[in-house]
Image (spheres, each protein chain N blue to C red):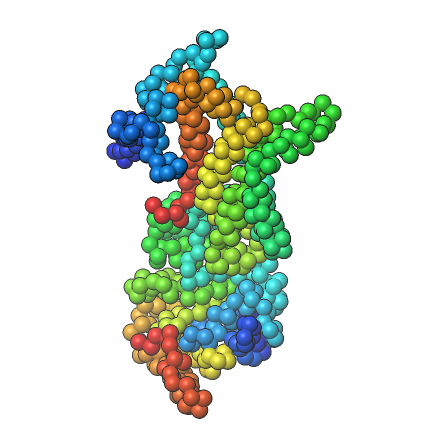
Length: 281
Length: 291
């Protein structure tokens, strides 16, 4: 069974003066245990797509199914774990209590909560900080807590909206490596929104390239992943990695030239705007 | 308990504040003209006669003398008793006001319609002068009788105090309940948490700093409300009554009138201290506040 099925989904945001087509007849399937990265410039609807899968918004048309269930039912049955760009920890709770939150909301016993939280805090390498409060942690550590929290109920699907977007490059690479390890240990499917090409290529099995106005999927790039036995970090310097980076970049740039043509026709002046927010280094 | 240097300094500055007020008082009394300073009919600075401004030490000394020749009860004891009575009534009023305020805030947070419908009335309610309200409350209360329960004058005073106190609590709590960021609300929605669980685990804890600020304001208004209501309903035994009584004997005994005023000030400080104590106990919920 597929983890996520998105069928011909359209999302229109109505404002007082006009309407914005954030997603236009987008279809996508994520297999169980598959890691899919969504990439594209600002306004391409990648975050919107993730929010539809999470049932934080409802599609204007089309259908979203998560593990065969309608998105709403999947949300209510806690079929997924979720992490956002902002860690979103509750400042009055300790690290452990933050990780316990989903379990507490769903009535797990105190002992079970504690055991699971300790396990997860250990998993993300924060064993010494379990009793700290979020304001005592660095941004990277806070994000680890958020990831631990998203894993609390053994989800088969992780939804992540630029979880490393606000972190510095070194912290970011380290957490990417950790995410891959965690993902291998849990076997969960992941939908990962990012605007960094190397991040998408390093993490994903497939990179979904999107374009804005209206939000569409322009291309899906399969990534050549190294053997599971190899050290994932070695991938960053492999030829396959650079080939994939180039492939994704070209998929984005192909869109760029198209935007340029469209821009000339409509009189707009900023073709590079289409790619704004995408790191191509 | 040993005090940190910061605490010592805070206490020092507090004492310095009181002292400088006394110095200011005595300084003006010494230097200011006896008839005060006025332009035409308008008095700009008060008279400095013994009648208008008794010496600070006279006022303090008077507090430790009997209140009247008829009894040997000291002024300070009478003031303390009255202050305790007022504090109790203000406490009841504050409690009532806080409960009503929080319930109104919950109602307004839950239902947008309630927000639109109730809020203008809340604001309107605070524009009604207390003096106009007091006799009404007393009159209504006087007609209440449920079996053995009988409405007493002090209950009217507490109701009037709560009428003032609920407003800042309602507004502050509403703000607090609405303070969680969208990311937090999304998180709770993603967990399938309904209104009640979102309230219990997110909105209420997030509202604590706002609620404390509102309570600080609310207790101050509850005290003022109680004192004013005591005066305007003629309730006996409280500090409000004492202020009026002692002021009436002001021409013959000017130093005595300042004791209940000082008592009212101390009362306000005690109430503020109680809220600050609550704030200390809830410090985990105030981590987001600037430190």
